Image (cartoon, rainbow, N blue to C red; front, side):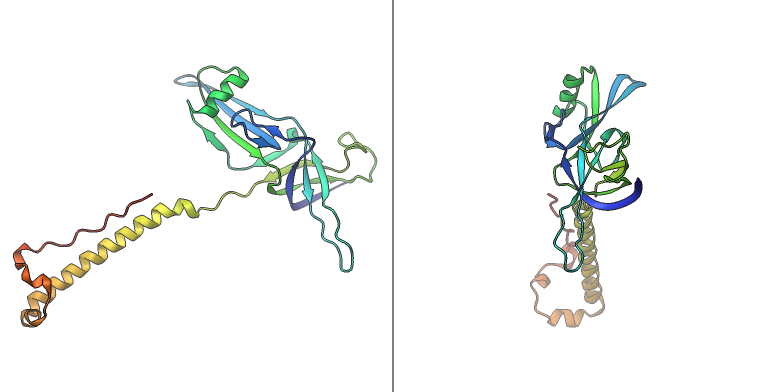
Length: 224
């Protein structure tokens, strides 16, 4: 028996951790999309993924007065899994692209998009739960336990806060510039229409001849 499920879980290795052939980092699952440039208008795309099965742990909530239960461990086949995640891009000539060429015997300029699932990553999963108590089927054995069939996995993308920081600094610079220019012209208007009041106001700026006064320069913030 199988039923459709959708839940939040964590990723765990089925037997042992793997190592990405591009970045060399330890992971549960890796998936590569390699673009090989043959000629200016010709390119080949290779898609490679680790074939090792891994698990999704589904936390189960205990009822009132019941003891906490261990998470349900669902095994899945990566060949049938659809993974939605932001890839890491390795451009032409970078160590990751060079490593991919050596690992898979590809010549020429390469660009690699790498997706990895790490141990303990939080993930949104959906698919069909193959009940461990049902009759044996082609996707499950008693040794493997329950499986998640036809799975779709989604990894949350990082926040956009850091990406908006340069824009925020640029906006602050524009606002400061507008404030400085507005203040200068307001002071200029005050001198032209109220010369007697301005003459009685002690200010270091009045020691400078009026025709030599220049508007203040807008600030130039330093971006990191």
